[in-house]
Every structure is written in structure tokens, then in C-alpha cells.
Length: 228
Image 1 (cartoon, rainbow, N blue to C red):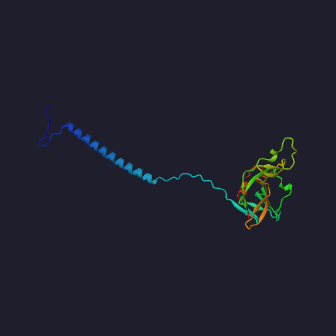
Image 2: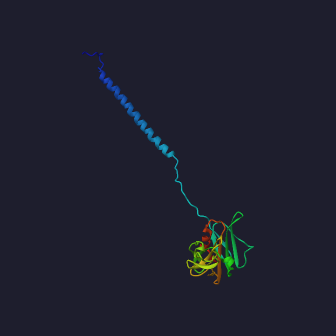
Image 3: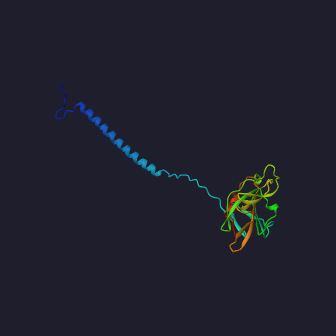
């Protein structure tokens, strides 16, 4: 087959033209791919710098604030607010009340150098404690109702019973959640040292009127009680 040609011009075969066209298309595609890759790289970096930093949620429990309440003879701590009843208190008996609005929640009575009559001393439960450093307490836990110390045929009258080696005056039939602090190896009369070197007797009773049997306030009081 004789191919046509023009004088003084190179002969270009059709196959060469097709190859050249495909080669140019391939180069174009490669350039476009490179440019797209560069654009995606810088775009992702910019997005990463713009992304807000999220902090992990923290679950923190804030302990209730402990407040200190004091008299010339002792001090104690608890959450909330205890109010000294100046009307009912005397020189030898300090009555503190804790309220929720106008509703009474708890009552704390501390007798100093005085032993109350059985009517004010008898309780349904005991809080056995140990004396620490002669002026403070190491409490154990509030006991179950002292009715457990009566037999099925016993007359349910007020009498002295021993709870964990600590004596209390038990009132088995009272519906009140009343507690008396009592010393392990002793009774409810605590002879404690004061900072001035003298000694005083303390008798401590507690009354819960919430009906919930939550003795946390009493445990706070007993753990922080200290003579002054």
C-alpha cells in the first residue's frame, strides 16, 4: 500500500496520532489527580484545625459542708444548721434542734454535770462509743431497738440493759427513735477532760422525729464531739 505524503513534510502514521492523543489524555488525568490529592490534603488539615476540642465530662461529688456548733463545754459538727433552744436550755442542759422549715427533724440534748431523771434518759436504742484522748468519742453504730433484750414472757418495763458491753436505760415500748450515747465498758455517764484541766460529766441523748431511721446526723455529732 502506497501512503500519500506532502513534499518536505514528515509522514505521520494514524497509529502514532492515536498514541499521542492517548498519551496527552493520560498526562492530563495524572495532573488532575495530583491537584485533587493536594487539595484534599490541605482541606483535611484545615478542617482538623477548625474542629472544636471536646472535653470529657467529669463526674464530681461535692461533699456536704460541715458546720461547727459550740457551747462553753463542748462542740460538734454536722451538715445543715442546728439551733440552740435558749428557752428550754439551762446552765446544765443544752438542747439543740434541727429543723426543716417549721417541722422539727432532730433533737440533741447534752447534760453537763447533771444526770437526767429516767423519763428523759430512757431510750429505744444505744450508740456505744469509746472515749478517745479523754475528751472525744470513737462511735461504733446505732443499735437495733433494745426490745430484743426482753424475753417473750418478760414484763416490758424500763430497765437497764447492756448493748455491746455498754449499759443503757431501755424503754422497750416507746414508738420514738431515741438514742443514748453510752460507753463500752461503762454507761451513759461520760467523765471527760476539758482543755482547762478540769473534768466534767456529760450525758447525751438524741431524738429522731423524721421516722426514717437515718442516724447520719448523730454519727456526725458523735464523731466530732469534743470538750471545751
